[in-house]
Image (tube, rainbow, N blue to C red):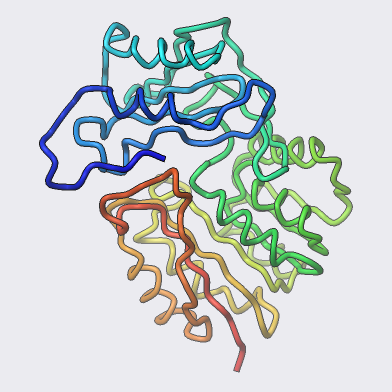
Length: 315
């Protein structure tokens, strides 16, 4: 992996670091293993804070958070072609809906990728997010390793990546809750891609704050994942709503439980979640912060994805 520039490095807006990342990335045309090839959003590469590059086989996806000319991006396409990549897509995340242009190869909207041996279906060009958050890979693996025989609650489930990992790890039951029926349907399809038995898996398309009764009836749980959007008006605002969730957690838990509490807001440090838990669910003690994947270097760890492990023990 490339070594990020130090914070004191002079600003350099050339694409050399991104080109080198493509050239050094592990790649075989036959592999379906996805991954991040370049993470500019971590502010480790001065001048490239607006650029990420992901390998979503068979597509190299360039994501921009501010406008760039296609001419300036051509070295990235050239590096991909030299490596044997046949499809390059460009997503404009600074535009509403995150539209996609194709810089190389024919367009592709549906693809199946692999992460740690598990399959996930992705969609390109239909919405801002393609269906799997790559920086959460260690969180999914953490749950998979601790799911055997567990009763799992997956809040803000999106396309059920945590659920897929839990079932692969031998979970007894999994309850997925998300307001989006479409996302949960894609989650169901992700399970089917892995030939999972869904008799112990539930998909609840509900508003969390109106669904405590349903969750209690399906519980109690000894593994809980809370991975909400940072700011989604009408659904969840972290600074206002996280305490509402933590306050009622004990209603849903077995006397001993493991919690994975997550937040991806660069303006909020991990202490926010630790202090909220102390205040609103004091029987849950902070254990550790999970490391993010090495392919997501960050100049300031407080800005990176927060994935915190708590251990709950009832009085």
